[in-house]
Image 1 (cartoon, rainbow, N blue to C red):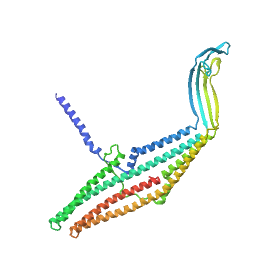
Image 2: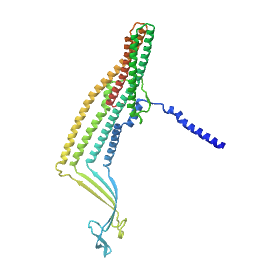
Image 3: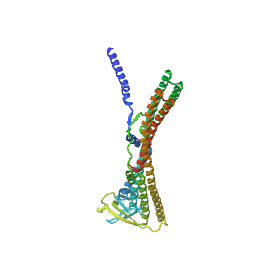
Image 4: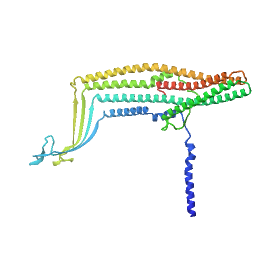
Length: 447
């Protein structure tokens, strides 16, 4: 009886320990993950469906290039076949004299039983094969460029979401600080009213400002949550997964214009895609013109085609052997179909040349616009930092003056509003600068 009680107690203690283990491990498991911009981009590349489609297109285009190259090489197959044909009642001659094997009803067959076991090597020579390889190479290059365009677009989008969420978190901190400052100022006005140093109107004005700051705090909290969920969709299977964002306080510098121009001319993915599309059109013209030229087919067959499935037949006749054939197809007349196909491919090539020229012009214009935007955002960001410092100092001095009775409550409220506005504007300026840099990098091809 005592042993049973002890066993029950030990089992209960073990169950309690197991029940407590998840609770003790829960705080560690609930620690939010720290996400940097590079980590956010890596996670987004693995989860974004548009980029996954572009990556799949690039992979299949690379395989198409391998398939086209394989078509230039001889192909080998091994064929096995057994044929039975109903006999017609007659017999063929025998090498030893007399009647031989029964003759088949189908004169095309060599006997009532025929066995084929042959290795066949085929090769086709012509201009169409190299044209297909050239087109596949250009298509693979175009697909790779399109994949890079999709990746850079994804990077730019993630950058905007990342810094937008980070700015929303900072604005939430600003709103919390502003609400606390408004509450402190309300207490200050109440103390001054009790000391008969200010009118009750100052308390009313301070309370109105505090109420507005409370509403601003709620709006900032909602905006921060929305921004986190938008980014969380790309980062985690569950968008509600807790995480924190980590980014350097100082904004990265802007590259020199000469470096930007050189990188855009060399690495711009849109330009690469247009060049690859033009090469595809050239390959199509080459393939269409290949139909004017003769095609040569080579065939080598080795094996048996006999009435016995054996290396040697009756009379020690050797069944194993080979045959070879050469076929030359010379195009003569196709009712101008080839000529029209050539014209079609030349028309498409002309359109590709126009698109190539338009891409070059658009790149020049977009590069000027993007660099001007990034440069202006950089300069304004430095100015916004100075404005925050100035607004903070103005608020400090105005509150000191109000405490000393030299400033009005409206001056304090204006200084507080200016400080909050300057801080929010600085966060918006950082987002603008990072977005401008990301757009500029999509043009230069260097992310």
